[in-house]
Image (cartoon, rainbow, N blue to C red; front, side):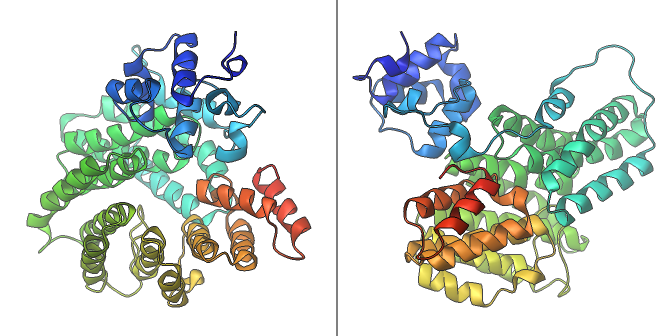
Length: 408
């Protein structure tokens, strides 16, 4: 018997059947998708409404289901990859580097100065490459192993520096594993980024790890935890800001922007803009060309955040007016620029302006194809555009969908 052979099953029953068939307990499944065992039980028994598509995709990944109809029961095959994007070729090697636990002798520790240069170069690759995920996939396995090995072997007087670098490697790794079918790795790298920063007793590095974790909590619906953690990190930084270098202010601003995004997701207009204004105040205390390397926090990116807040609050007209004040070319990070174009496309979609939405998605794909390929909002818009193509653009929509990996 298969889940699809039971047409009377509701989604919750199908989740339970698939979970039991996989030999997985509720606590394990809940941990993989960022929820509690009680939440899984509530879904399975129908006490909670059917999870949204994003959560169904996480459940499918966790249960190694490739056909989403096994959970939805819609009667025909629906590839998980069509909605979520296929896995990345380098993922198995990155995963191995993250999850292996060498207990015996390891390679010779690296020079901390050399590791720092490698990490800085990897961040630059991440922001400057249209194929940033592929480039990171090439760099990360060796960087993870070398940074971890060096932190283990470092003498007491150098261990804090080594742990700071290791936290930075995990913060970078988050940009690779995010949106891939490996949610457990997203949790792993975020947790390690925070932990290594705490072990280094470095408020700035800890805050960078928290910035990563806040996004993980946000995307799994744990909004109150995300807000508490972000506020705690800002409080941790606050006593040092009078004499701190610019990047301490940069990560503080980035955390304020994340808090604004969290409130916008919950429809809290006043709180969202109050925290955006705090971020705006911070960015204007910094040099006009300042950009925080990890978060891309800058004047241009804060303007892009304003577009996203309006979109999340359901105000597409205001979003497009905010977009008019942002010059995409002023966003140095190609992946972040590509994401901004997707956010502008979302605003046009809310107004059912399909020609404009397609044009922005096309531009996003030309800017950084490995951003749009793994962006759920973009893939969802392309599926909709395939169903209702703009006049005269049906072939163009199909071509773009094919390049992104979305079935029409």
